[in-house]
Amino acid sequence: MDIYKFWRDILEQNAENIKNYFHKDAYINWHCTNEHFTVDEFMIANCEYPGTWDGEVERVEMTNDLFITVTHVYSRDKTLSFHVTSFIKVIQDKIASVDEYWADDGIAPQWRLDKHIGKAVK
Image 1 (spheres, rainbow, N blue to C red):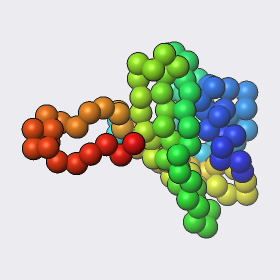
Image 2: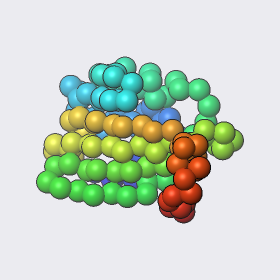
Image 3: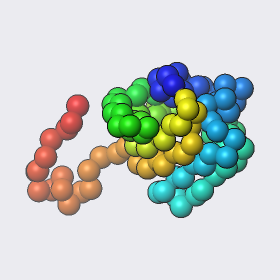
């Protein structure tokens, strides 16, 4: 499976292509919001999400049948920005399950800024 093409289709909300990546009984978990989706439900959640999106896969690790990706996802107007860590289990070149953790990008909390600790990653 081409993980970069998968992410491109996700970001472009390309419903026609996305469904083909999944086993029919696959599931997707968004742990930060405590949501469990079937493939059909995920298609609605992803492809009907408002706005237009872009992003970049920043890291990919693979172990056995598991892709681990870190992807920067942002709105094309640059008003929203997230990083998502995904654990994507692939069996026979199709996704069997996805466990994702989404985080809003933003500045450090004020208490850490006040302590003058740390510095920007990029």
